[in-house]
Amino acid sequence: MGAATTPVPSTTLDERDLPPLFQVSDRWALRHQSDSFRAVRTHLLVLLLATTAAVFTEQASGHVMAVCAALLYALTIVLGLSTSRRRSRAHWQAHRAAAELLKSLAWQYMVHGGPFRSDVVDPDAVFAERLEERLRELRACGWEDSRDGVRERGRGQITPRMRAERAKSYAARRDLYLRDRLLEQTVWYKNRASRAHRAAARWSTVTAALTLFALAAALLRTVGMLGGADLAGLLSAAAAAGVAWQEVQRHGPLTHAHSIIEQDLETARIAMSTTVTEAGWAEAVEEAERLMSPAHTEWLVRFGT
Image (cartoon, rainbow, N blue to C red):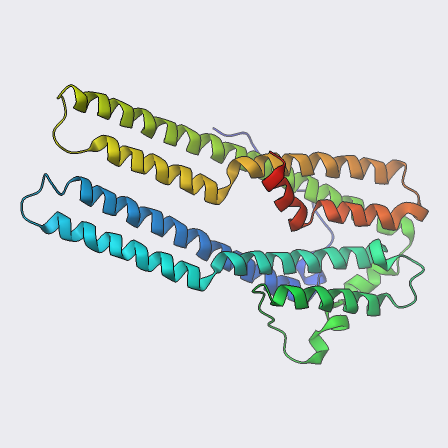
């Protein structure tokens, strides 16, 4: 039985207080992520079925198994071509980047962080400029703009609640950010690291067991205790499929990345609640948002292990 995850602290803001485009991009990111994983899972399963049919072709009378194997291998080719054309993974990452961009800019705007420091003359204009500049870049990478009309662009993504929070005192904004953003994200990364660690351990156990069974089958076949079916090859293919699925899910690297981010966010939260003054607040918020960016997570996944 896995360790219980830490409950996320209650917050005073919800998704309806964030830019409307965040909610749309977040939903599309989840949809494309599900499509991407489903496509890979289906591809691996069909390939494993094709391997199974090929292994038992020699044991079956007639050509039924041979035809099944050929059809299944042909289907894997079709599935691979279809997956490459749909580019679900690219669309998922582009929409996730857009959603996190909108959330990060919204938080920086509300608490006077980063480019939205207190002495900025027109923070709404800065928000609109930064947002549209980044969205233009993401549009070229597969992000789909669902907005209709000029009113939903730029300043139109600033909600009344965002303006209300920005108008509050420094102490109120600091407490909101430390609780609803940093503490919530610290707990989220801790829970995600725990889930990824358990998944990595589970899949490592499965692939190790399949590999051991393949070794046993190979030894038994060598001494003539198994029939003609190549069970070792089939079990090896199943183990390879398990390894491939782990690579897609990236459980191990994500465990490492999320653990590091959790620790860095907790350090930032303590510093921002004790030593960071109002003069250094904008820079501290910008650095904290950098830690939570998808680009930082991806960098840790690639180079942090």
